[in-house]
Amino acid sequence: MGRGWTVMGVVNVTPDSFSDGGLWLDPGAAIDHGAQLHADGAAILDIGGESTRPGAEPVDGAEECRRVIPVLEGLRERAPGAVLSIDTSKLDVARAALQAGATYVNDVTALRHDPGIAELVAEAGIDCCLMHMQGEPRTMQDDPRYDDVVDDVRAFLEERAGFAIAAGVAPERIQVDPGIGFGKSLEHNLALLRRLDEIAALGFPVVIGVSRKRFLGALTGREVAADRVAASVAANVLAYERGARVFRVHDVAPTVDALKVAAGTLPGDDA
Image 1 (tube, one colour):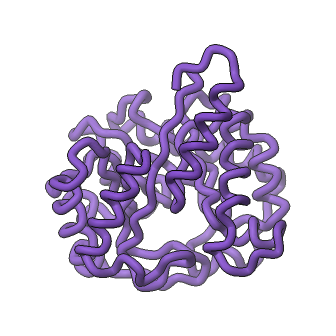
Image 2 (cartoon, rainbow, N blue to C red):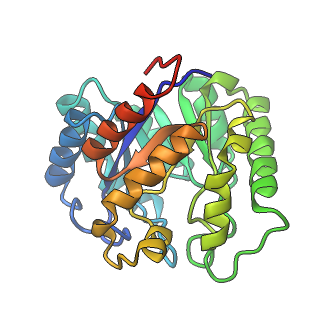
């Protein structure tokens, strides 16, 4: 795998996401925000209508569609060069999103909640991201435990990638995400970042989502999520050096600048 990288901009069309819940709930505001993230350098825009923060309550598919479909349709017009991603674990939402212009499915359950998404992705010939999460958003941070978090996450992602391939998804269409903050303690998150090369060794592009997360606040003392930009950028650069290639972030412009510098220091750069 080369040293190229891609930034994925977060467009949360939710009232309760941990960092920016409610800011982009209005479709027009979300479209403007997504278009700006694309202008700032996000090649992928990840649109989500259901919060997956710790303690979040689930949203039904109809409400999720009501939130995201107008935004996808608007961004298809406003940011025609962007890859539009739907952040969902529901088959009906994924199907509607593809009809609205999405060409990437980001599933935090790694196709466990609605396995039919695998066939949808295979038939459409699009990319997908399979993420590790212990438990579900409402309970995942209650008391996460692992024998060895890196070994356990790696084995899980390998198994879920195998499931997707068996359903017809081309291996080159699969990306994997270790799920930083999803059913992990501070020590678990740090171990995953420290040994991220072991996840990258699976051979699939690694997506990393550390942006503004609580563990960065624990390390820095920054209680307000929006104050964790520098910590997020630092964590993404370290993740890049350890093999991550797709970076899901709220703060696109500083992340792009940092990754350009990081890539420039490594031989054989093809960014």
